[in-house]
Length: 192
Image (cartoon, rainbow, N blue to C red; front, side, top):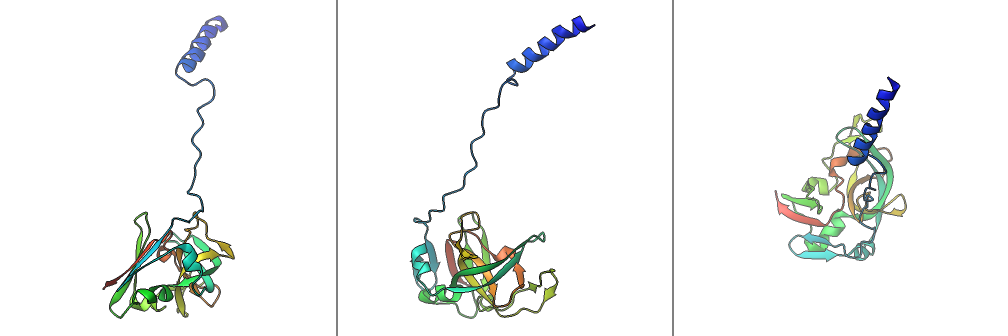
């Protein structure tokens, strides 16, 4: 019986070898992300006038820092972070600002879009939670175009060079993460 098994084993090994099962598998190409070189990145703000910014120009605007903490739609918490960047209201001002009855449409090159109404741009109308994800009354909030997280430049994987963050002066205030748009490259003011 062993003698009969040897030819079967040899045939099995040869079949695997012929089918490409022997040896090492070809290496998969490495998973790469775009380099954190944002020199060609631009942000277009389209209000009553159009303004375009480089990352360097945004970093020269008055900076604001605050506490940011988000939760995904499936309950995954991100943060807490110290977020640094430019307030959306400050970024909109040179392009005409935002008026009652208008919205800020913030989008990314991957097609993701989030719309903030006038009240939200002013820091009102958000649903907020404590760290246990129980809904709490909203403290004063601000929408930030963040370029630095916890004292470090925002990486591409974290949504850099610029992403939305909803910040508070209070610690432990959690907001909905779906509004934290990554890789922001366009802001448009539109009528509601």
